[in-house]
Image 1 (cartoon, rainbow, N blue to C red):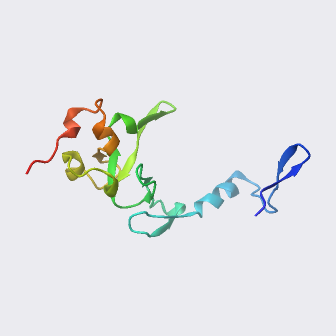
Image 2: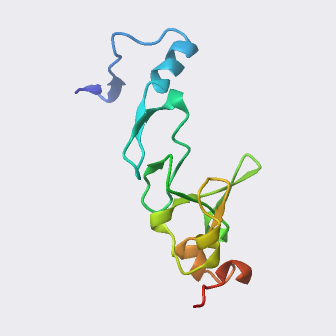
Amino acid sequence: MKCCYRERSKIIPVRPTEQPKTSREFTELFWGEALTCGVCKQTFTLRQHEVVAYCGGCYKFLHCGIAGKCVGPNCSFQIRGETYKQTWCQACIPTQYLINLYHTGSPECDCLCHECAEDPNTHKKYKRIQTN
């Protein structure tokens, strides 16, 4: 599929024949996109609001199997003054930490990823290990 062509020293994008005429039509194009959950392999459209996150370890979209949002300093970032935390799936977090055993199941839960578990700036209360 050709996306652009070269004319002398400029690159000019090739315009599709049917472009959306309004911003609403443009938005509707994306609502029909389908994403597959990386855990259960079900497919959902964005319109269904079922896919709620993507994993910071395996980069798969998730609607189930969510461990939670990492509490460590490496998974926290700011966008326009708001703090966001990276979401992780249950397969990509270390299972020896208590926070990862008892607080999983939704995007609102907390978890601890491998990288943040090894970071000395992560609070010790999150690094408690399960003892038998």
